[in-house]
Structures are given as C-alpha cells and as structure tokens.
Length: 143
Image (cartoon, rainbow, N blue to C red; front, side, top):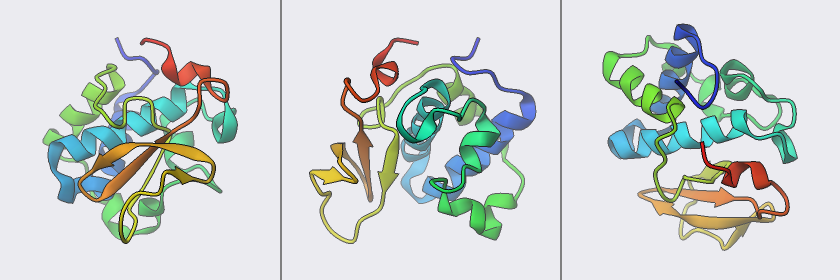
C-alpha cells in the first residue's frame, strides 16, 4: 500500500515527471524526484497545503515543475520508470531527498538556503531542500 493514494494513471504521471526532471541522473536521481513529489502530496504545509493528489502536485501552478511545460514530459511512461514511481509511492526514501520538498539545478555549488529552505544535500546536478520541522513537521513523519 502506498503512502499516498495513487491510481494507475497517477503512477504513470509521476513516472513521466521523474523521467523528465532527472533521467540524466539515472534511477537514483529519478527516485529522488519521486521522493520530493510524494512528500509534497503527503504534507499539508507551506506551498503544499492544498496539494493532495499526484496530478495536483505535478501540475501545481505556480510552484510546479518546469518539465510539464516541455514535450518530453508528455511522452508515454516506460515500464522501468513506472517501477521507480511505485517505489517512491510505496515510501522508499533516498537521501538527500528523503525529507525534501524542493530541488533545483544550480549553475555552481548548492546555496546553503534557497527561498529560506535549508539544503539537505546534492545528488549529481540537483540540490535538494527541506523545510525545518517547525515549518513542516509532516514531512518528517514516518510513512
């Protein structure tokens, strides 16, 4: 059972997002994007108070993912990506994205803070950012 509700179409949508945002960073990079997505659906804090489904999360505007504005996102999800999306939905977490709600790809090193959120670490070209527990305790709860 997943840590967030997901239909088969939701799983495919998350898989497409994971591929579009991080395919060049391999399976682990895509899983980390999945972690951020699942965390956004799971919590009720900050920019994600009303985000309670995978489609709401993927297409959130403003504050959503740039990948949804590119044609590559709209290509069919592959079996390998669907398998990864299921892992994220089932609660597998991967550091530094375990408790992250944001990520971005800077031109250089990761800033210590990004929009007042703390850096959790870097994986390849993406920096991951997590809220403080006082701002969003829900992200730190166990699945």
